[in-house]
Length: 195
Image (tube, rainbow, N blue to C red):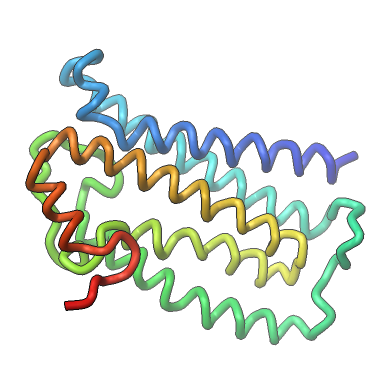
């Protein structure tokens, strides 16, 4: 029973994370309806989205102790240290990318602001370094928990993060217009463009 409740909460929390994050990256679009309070409201919604991320991490840990009865084994067939090495190989570069993206985005990583300038730093190379790094965090947690099911479940975050990035780009196009469209043509979304 605990396993099924935990899984249901994990699914709902994942959808709510997506919902609140998409709301949080749409301040310019929502300003038409909400006025200048849209930016403050989006900051609150970003905080709610982060709470749901922590709920999902807790669900992952609970799943380790209460796995669903699936045909998959509860643990990988290799020793845990192999999963640890895989988690490090994936996690170190992806988390570094995410942290650099957060540093270079500044306050905008947590709270959107109307007067925020276009980004510098790593954003000169890729448009979504935080998402490109963070999305792999779910695989890292699943590997650290040595769980085949959670590793497969973590794949749902790839389309979730794509949707979030698409929503953010629509708002940034509204916010910055042609300068952002030109930036998109010159800068890769998740990988640097050649040339």
